[in-house]
Amino acid sequence: MNKPMTTEDLFNKIQNILKEKGKLPAILDYGLATRSPVPIKTYEFDLVNKLALGGSEGIYLDLWIEYYVNGNKEKRRLGTFKTLHEDNDAMHVMAGLLADFTIEGHAYVSEHLDDFTWEGVDVHALDENGKRYSWGYTCCDMEAALQKKDELLKKYPQVVVRDNTTRKEEMFSQDSSEHKGSSD
Image (cartoon, rainbow, N blue to C red; front, side):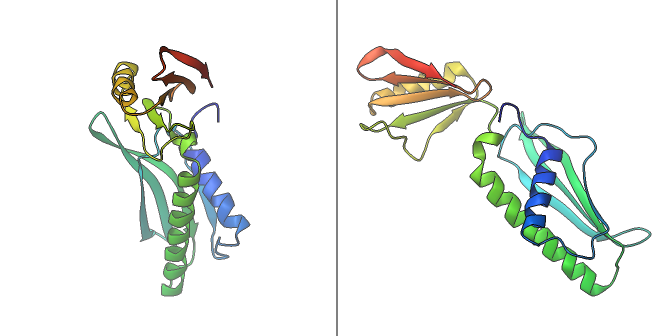
C-alpha cells in the first residue's frame, strides 16, 4: 500500500471477506462502515465491540479499534451491523457474526502487518546468508534506530533499517561503515 488503510477500508475489507466466505447472516438489515474514516498507522490495536439490543428496535453490533498514541487511549469507529430481529436466536446469530468478524479481522491484519505499519523505524538483524531473523525492533525515531543498528552490528553481519513512513530501507554491514544502498 502507498498510504495507510482507513477504519472504513478495514471494515469494508472484513465485511467483504465474510461475504465471500458466506458468513454474513441472512437476518442482517445492513452493515455500514464509519462515515468518518481515519488512517490506521499501527497494527497494535484492539478490536472492540458492543453487541446490544437497540433502543427502539433490533440488535446492533458496533465495532471500533482502540490503540495508544503518546500514552493516551484513542478510539476510532469501524462500523455497525444491524438486524431488525430482536429474539434470542437473532442475538446468537449476531454474536456469531461478532466472532467471525473478530477472527477474520485478526487473520487479515496478521497477514498484512506491513499495511498497518506507518510509524517509527524498524531495525532487523540478518544472518550470514542475508535472511532476516523473525524478531526485530521498532524505534520511535531514526536516531534511536541507528543506535540500535550499531548495537546489532556488533553481533550480526548485516542490519536493515526501515523508515516505516517513507518505506525506504537501508542495509548496513559489519564489513564497512557505509550502508549498502537503499530501496523502497
